[in-house]
Each structure stands twice: as C-alpha cells, then as structure tokens.
Length: 255
Image (tube, rainbow, N blue to C red; front, top):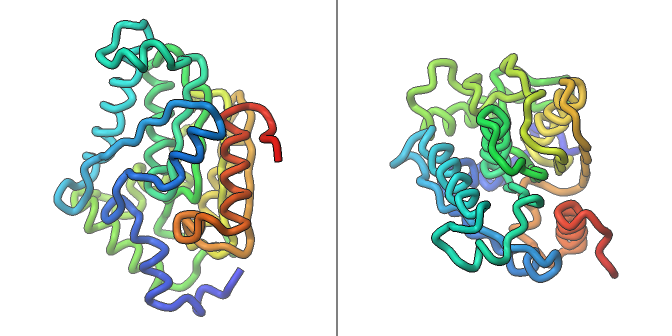
C-alpha cells in the first residue's frame, strides 16, 4: 500500500468522486454480468447530492427494492420479471457509495422481514468512513480525512455527527449488524484505496457480530478505488468480475 502522503490531490478526488454525488447508477459491467451469470439485472438511478441530500439515495434505493419484490408473487407490473426472475436468488450489489447503500438496504430488509429473503449482498470497495482511523494502517493524513469530511458535509449537510453519521460510519458507530438480512456476503477491497481498511474492518465486525451466513473477502493489494470501472479490461478487473459472477451464480465460472 502506498503511503497516504504520496496520494496526489488528483488521485484523491478520483478516488472519492463516486461517493453519492457525481456518479450515476449506470454500470459498464452489467452486460457481462448478465451474460455470464444468466441473471436479470436492475440498475437504480437514485437521486444524487448535493441537489438531493442524504437520505434521498437510500430512500430511492429502498423504493426500488420494494418495487422489485412487488413481482415476487407473479403479479407485478413488469411481466418479464414475473415470468423470469427467481426470487429465491436475489442479490444486491454495488461499488463505492453503491456498496454502502447495498449494506443499508440489506439491513433494512432484515428489520422489515422482506420476503422472500435476499440471498446475498456484494460490496465492492464500500464507502464507509469515520472521524478516527479504524486501525494503525487506516488513513492517518488529516488533510485527506478533512477532505472526505467536506464531501460528506456536501452530500449530507444535516448530519449532526458529520462523518460519524451511521449512514457513513457503519464500522465504528456502535450499530448492530448481526441482523443483516441475507445469507451470503462478498466484500472486495484494494490496498491503495482510502476506504480499504474500513472495508476490512466491516468484514471483521460482521464476522464477530453473530450474523449467521457465509462471508467472502477478496483483496487486490496493488489496485485503487473502483479500478475495475477505470480499466474494465485489465487482468485484475476481469478477475474481480469472475469472482463476482461466481458469487451470485454460486458455481465456478468456466475458463
């Protein structure tokens, strides 16, 4: 992992720009995922900050989850979903802010006893943060930590606790995540991502929480935040895609 003081201003903003504000829900990997894993994929175009502050993104995402599950009894408004979707194998997934939102959607599905139960959640380079580093290897540079706090203030100006808002600080907020409403979890992190240590701490917290399920953690040490979106045809991006497809298809992908 590169020393955090070696991260340039350009690299920093490239790393955090997907966080709730600038990126849309359109994902370049969707066609490959659908083709390889034989699944149906729905992309949530949630409202984004600063025009629509937090919790708009979470509200919109939950509305989308509820809409998808309105088809589970075969009488939803989209006939093709009624006929083709297997609601015993529903996965929620996202990267960066989308991974953060995915966690909160599956937590809410557990609290509200969503039925059928979500099968799993994949969180790729999850955007979790806190005022204080989670460990000695987490970002220590106060300039970087201050800049992330500024971004959060932009997207969530009403947060009383700043970046310790439970929406953002999942690892250290004291929240109980043992009720995560799914059976399987994939957490993917990288060694050169400012959010990397938070992702690992999240996985460790989940493992110790008493949650009953299968957890898989994958680490790509030499890559940065959302590298697979910046260079989708790279060797490591294709490897990550293969891991993701295997996770949602529950079987190895043929070479």
